[in-house]
Length: 86
Picture 1 (cartoon, rainbow, N blue to C red):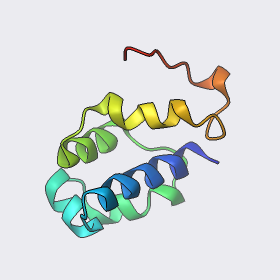
Picture 2 (cartoon, one colour):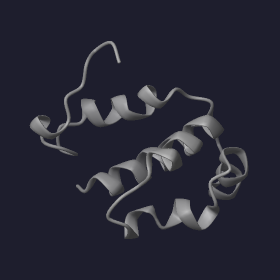
Picture 3 (cartoon, one colour):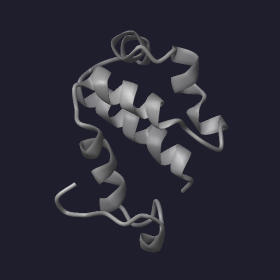
Picture 4 (cartoon, rainbow, N blue to C red):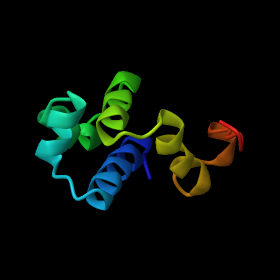
């Protein structure tokens, strides 16, 4: 799985947990809806985009990324070193 796909899936997963639509996430986060929905068509995602999504979801940035660390199929472990104490 590509990193951009994992980031998009994580955003949608967290939105569903909170029963928030993509439009609502865009409004809460200040990240334009087209930016959110086109993440998977990109090869990169700005950290400021993920930060905005986290801010809108009221979660810490590290809590967003810990998900990637716990699922080794997303990235090989040598590409992402995760510390237990972020």
